[in-house]
Image 1 (tube, rainbow, N blue to C red):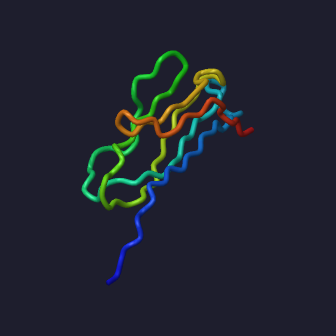
Image 2 (cartoon, one colour; image 1 turned 45 degrees about the horizontal axis):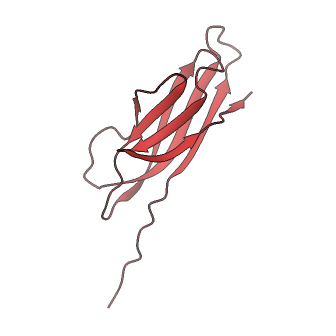
Image 3 (cartoon, helix red, strand yellow; image 1 turned 90 degrees about the vertical axis):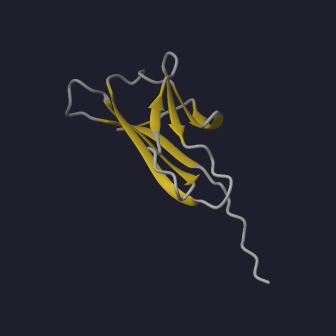
Amino acid sequence: MISQATEQDIDLWEVWIEYDQFNPHLFGTLYVIGEIMIDHKYDQPLLRKAEGTGKQLVLQVPPRCLGRGRAREVSYSEPIENIGQYTSISIYAGDELITSFEEIEVMI
């Protein structure tokens, strides 16, 4: 009898701001990149901005799949007017908090 290895539901995330010295109207661009496990049949947007409070950015990904799924890289980017535009980033799968960032690295 052949047994299949259980798939791990691994979420890997990175966030950073790239400073843009050539655009006088923006500080730079915020980037969020991660990996999620999704159902094979999921056809909705994989990463979207949700309502946050204050200077918190909230991103939403699909709920974690319960059965077999596939790993999928997702990304989000947004022009940033000033370095203090966001002080934290939270990423949710449905109502479940996947990860949060209280520090955002700035790449100059």
